[in-house]
Image 1: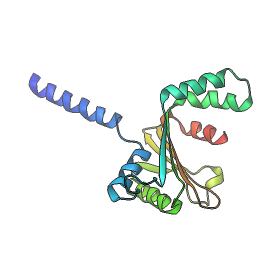
Image 2: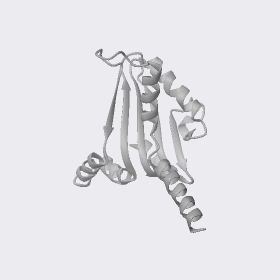
Image 3: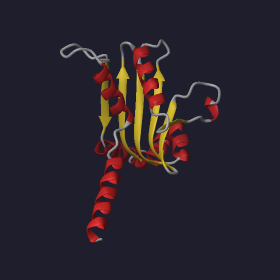
Image 4: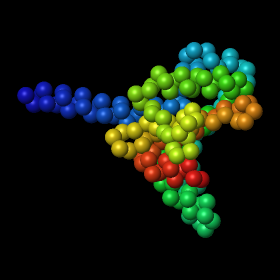
Length: 172
């Protein structure tokens, strides 16, 4: 009986650990692009770049915001403690192709990522998507396209957030 319980406990802990390290959306997008050959060949300039802002860097930004008294920095102080990391995917060439790839990936993971429709987005195509764990928002994905459709960006926030937090973030 003890052996059976220890096996169940081990399986439960390993499943919970796997859930904790689940890849974020930008990671999924980059892996999908590499697997499908959607990025340029080795040695050539890439059509996109991916930048990760680590928790340490987020802490430094928060520190600077705390030392300044401006209204925007006040909003940053309110928002930043809830953000664990930020990844920015930018495609400066073939923006439409990468936008379509991101939207296709979101539809493939439609049970995981749900569109967020704020008051100003009711009739437009959703550009903000949320991944939740119960009532907590653990990931925010923002898709943006430049006016001339020359640059496509994905902003991928991870952390421990609420819907109210999303609203506050969009005010910045």
